Length: 378
Image 1: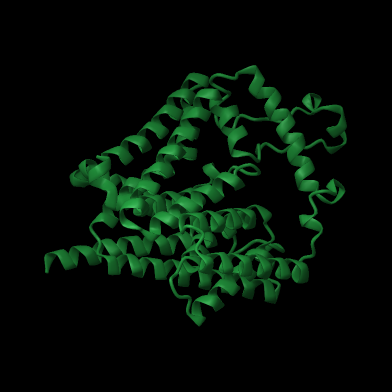
Image 2: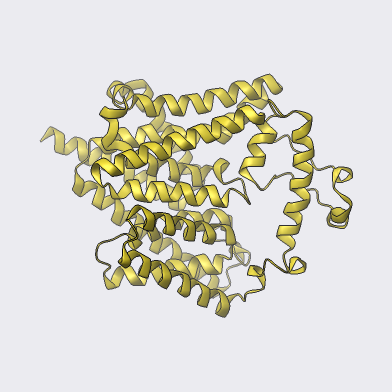
């Protein structure tokens, strides 16, 4: 009886967290911080149950904090916390998930799918009525890049289902339509990369291959009808202003990385200097301060040492997820692993690994994905 009550409480906490993820950036951060503080203060069992994951998370946050402090002052170090703390939700999610039954995980999977569907429908409604709050392509009052990424796990859960119901097919179509009309290319490319990764995980299952082909065709048709293919013609840079401006920014970031290659300049310290831009890009001068590339961002902020730390953490997470899948055939492991691969691809064109909501969702998935491996990894 006590165990059932405890499970219901844990399930309620996760549900509230996920609901906030889809509805309020401020709320989801407050809830996540509260969950982390509670786990560290009162959840003594979680510290022993997922030692390896806790160590990885603390190593990532603490090491980049120290590097940033060495780069400047305490303010710079605090900025690093703002960009990295989200990983701490992973061991918290792992601990909670390890106490839940399989039926509870199925509930969370369904929650992801249906919450994403509602999120997508709200955006489509906003788009249909011309709500100025979405400013053309902003979804549910947030940046298009973030909104699209939040929808990816639901699509992955549907793709790897043993049997797709008609309801799931409709939801997949709604999500595809929303991601297309949100009109942010990075998450769509990430979705395709994640879907292909899920296919590889499933040993090239013909059913999943067929679903991925249908997904690509459906999104391609939606892009052609609703947006046009100009934004996807990467061979004509005259129509790719966002790519050209990224090239300008990357050129300047690389020049600054060369100045302090070992420890970098600290987070959020990149300032454009168009005198550093090579001649061919001078006409595209910009005052943008976002490096628009996670790998260049970590190199600029924390140097080669920070860059190596990021890859070590990602590699450790992927290894744990693969190990969990091989042992338990855990569906969450597939989705988490695929999501990280998608993020790694998208990170080539934006600060994906340092965006709060995207990282909270991704590391939460990672925690659940490896939760059943706690004994082997401790």
